[in-house]
Amino acid sequence: MKKDLFIKMYKDAFGNYELPLAFYYSKEPLSPPIKSRGCYMKDLNRCRKGEIISYDKDSIGCPGGKVYSGFSEVPPFIPDFVSYKERYKQQPEQVTQFIKALEMLDLSDQFLNFLPLSKVDNLDQIEGLIFFVTPDVLCGLSSWIFFDRNESDTISFPFGSGCSSIISQTVVENKKNGYRSFLGLLDPSVRPHFESNLLSLAIPMSRFKVILEHMDQSCIQGTPSWKKIKQRIEDEI
Image 1 (spheres, one colour):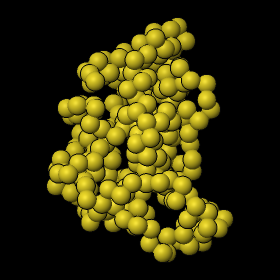
Image 2 (image 1 turned 60 degrees about the vertical axis):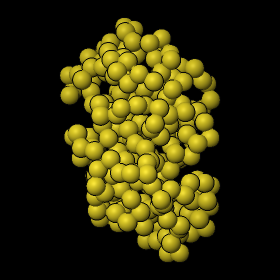
Image 3 (image 1 turned 120 degrees about the vertical axis):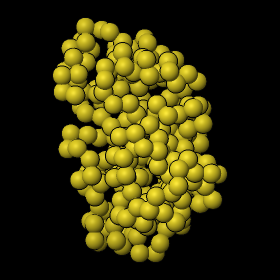
Image 4 (image 1 turned 45 degrees about the horizontal axis):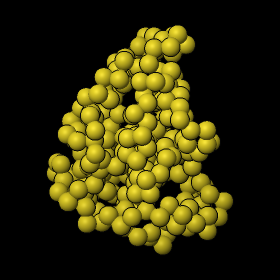
């Protein structure tokens, strides 16, 4: 899959707006694993500035982050913490059901790598792409993603931690060769680490390789309506 072709079409559509990040698992890290305290999603801002970052089962400090990255089993205290302390679910049982339904893979013997798209050698090796989107950019990406499908869950936004919506959902969907992409950064715990006007949109490789084939046919490639929005995106950069 041609990375340079996608970058060209992306820039044609969105101008100089930031490129997405890529992530994947490997037996060896792309860089020495970094120690992260609290929510490790905040470290993606370093990646947005050009760094390559890697984690393993010992370097992520957040217990939930370990679970949603496939690095550990669910600690017994997590359901009560999410329900009674964070108050994100009415009952602890809902937390247990949510995690079980994710069907996250056991990846505890691997490293999780994040890198700018410009530093990816081969798109075929990655799990998915992570876009950080304003409403206007989300408008364009949604138009492209829905171009070949009518199903309402083509873009899904299950409430959950930043790492569950960006990592877990994407990894499992890619494993299933599925078609869903995922909105994220809806969790109040992760939002303070990112700009107030941003959400994340994670596209698994199983979906990306399909929609790349018709990117040049969708409205983001030069229709009058899109040109107006593209200009506003560029004006706000």
